[in-house]
Length: 321
Image (cartoon, rainbow, N blue to C red; front, top):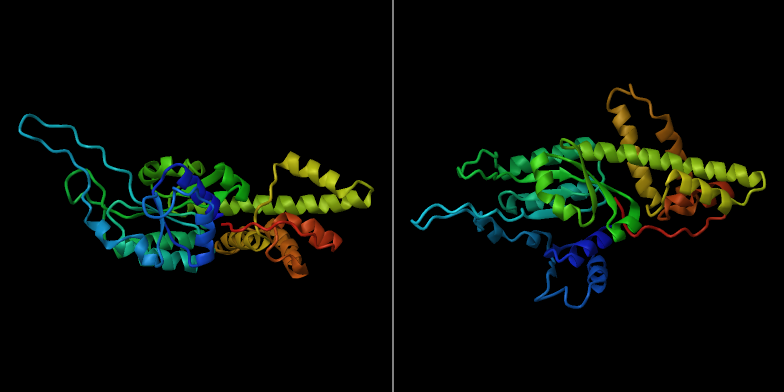
């Protein structure tokens, strides 16, 4: 998922420094770029160490301010866009390690945009830890109207790899409104940003969204199996149902199970007062798919893996959130 999103940013002329723990992933990204985009003289560079994404010298960069020359005051120079540090990672541990490594190096006003999908309470805790590590209180200590905090936004996405390539992702954002506004032009290159509330709210709505998506896809597979037993070809039924329900694939089954687990955790975190029978049932179906050899495959392949046992080779998403 991260590769097509980064491609959108590079194509728009955004200056990028990129890092991935997998050199092969970095290589695939650079192979996908036009020749003049990458390397020295280009706008896209790779770093070999995570720390090098944010050079310490960036902390010394002054904020743009207006000056006078004795002949009258000039209006302040508009501040440049904040440094944005974007993560798209598979687990809370990976997000935490990245934020903890980069937070002390981040310049004043930087915005961490975590586009991974992790539990809401863990996302909120990470935002608080970043604030504690940076020690910036946002009190305009410079007296120039600036905000020296390092901000964290949770911004998981919906739409799958096809939407990532097309720049039509739905980007579900939790965090401070002013931080969201500052990075909206950047995020709009990758899709449609939607601010849904305070820190963690993006993760809450993403889990709710994927509960609906996962349960709906499971229902389509069950309905397709019933129709097949009644003599209607599976492709006919699945095509009609998927289109009418607006469903799409492009998401590995293990990632769907992760998101359903987050939704179930949201119910149990409140003393079990919010039952999750749909999430439980859908998770059971995807577990059966995984146990039937579907691990790593697109979650839309549950009909082949669960209902027919044919283990069809649905294309897997290269990454996801």
